[in-house]
Amino acid sequence: MISGRHIIFIVLISAAITALILSLIAWKRRTTARLPSIYFAICMVGVFIYNFGYAMEISKSTLPEIMFWVRFQHWGIWVLAPTWLLFSLCLTGNEKLITPFRIAVLSIISIILLLTAQTLGGHNLYHLNPCLNTTGVFPTFNYDRGLVAWLGIVYISLCLLISAFLFSNMLFRAAPAFRKQAAIFLVGSLVPWIGMLLYSFGLTPYNLDMSPLGLSMSGVIASLGFLKFRLLDIVPLARDVVFESMSDGVLVLDTHNRIIDFNLGLQAMLPNLRKAYVGTSVFETLASYPVLLRLIKENSSEAVELQTNLTEETNYYLGNLVALHDRRKKKVGKVVTLHEYTQVKQLLGQLEELAVRDSLTGVYNRRHFNRSIDDEFYRLQRYGGTLSLIVLDIDHFKRINDTYGHMVGDAALRLLAEICSEILRKSDTLVRFGGDEFIILLPQTNSTAAVNLAQRLRTAIEQQRVEYDNHSFLVTASFGVASVDSPGNISRDELIRRADNAVYEAKETGRNRVCVSNSLASAAFTQE
Ligand code: GH3
Ligand code: MG
Image (cartoon, rainbow, N blue to C red):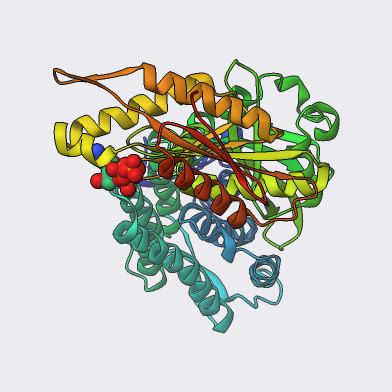
């Protein structure tokens, strides 16, 4: 006939086997969440020992046999308490609180309690006055709790309550997706603690210790969160997904600058990078990216600009380097990130271009002219040669505006800019200086060539009709030419002033003509 004793035995053995299975599963899964899996696996071995030892204790009837299995149980009890706490710390994101010193303190307390419990049957330091209670349906173990036993209960309670506190904290603070799991672990921490309290205060039937059963239940409950909900898989999975799907390129190196890992983003940026390069020195593998290598070599915290020309278009990246440290602040490697900013670079280029252009005619503006003439003066001083300037001013432009309107005047300005642009060489710079005045900067051009060019421009302008809004008319312009020879003994303002004076002279002497300035006198060249 199956007695209550048999049932309790079977339940305890089942709980022991369950704990063992959970331990094995957690151990197998330690690749995804290493530390919590290991702590959980060890904790479940402790629960297995506790349950199995207790089942054996229940099945025995003599005091020496029972004392043997009580001593056996303590090998489990003092392993499971600290490992459950370590497991909770990992799971609640408090891994950094686990230091070697704290592990040592927990281990020493556990070892002392374990050794004290092993004195049962000898000095009985933990279990005072051990005896058999034969008043129930089957003999049970009875003892008085001395200071050490109460300290043991405080220690286990602390481990379980700190875990419960951590999980309740997580319950309120974690993202909603994690709350269900936090609630499960919270219950998992409280069930064995309640069981232990009931037993410690003699409130259980048959004076049965409910803690091992409670712990197995906790194991199952925790496994729900641990295995079924795959809580521990989420973080590494999420990190993998982010790592692989982010558009920024990431390269992980060890302290010897060997490639440890890189993401798809980086592979798209540097297509000659292959998975086979993992483990090789970055200096051999990525030799074609000297800027990147310099960043890695110099350990610079400043961003660098990297350029690749893999397609027809140039791609630009901003490279950053961050040192990797472990928990003890020891350097273990570095992470290089590449952020593409080709589009930004292109937009910046467009903005820069817009900033130096005249909005009406599209030719360069005064800002660009100032920069260019300074550069040309520098070149002139360094390499010699002749620099010439042509200033041109439309004749009677006010009259055009007054007769046809401002819009037509604008069209005339645009047409003049077009005519000049077509005739000029690439090395010449056409600038709208303001109003109806243009300046042309002619590097390495002597006065005679500049005058000839001005004549060509003058002729082209006077021959081209402005046609706009049913209006059709001819315009002319007056030209002033000034040149400066190596070694550039006049200032840039003086050169402009001389060209201006020459235009003034052209206006004075009848307009639609080219006048040239020299340091001593100006000679006029007209169309005749
Ligand atoms: P001159 O032959 O002596 O040069 O006579 P002018 O009438 O051309 O005199 P000036 O060069 O001093 O006149 C420039 C005029 O150009 C004055 C101004 O109203 C006009 N102007 C300046 N900027 C613009 C513009 O952007 N669009 C138009 N339509 N007119 C402009
Ligand atoms: Mg004018």
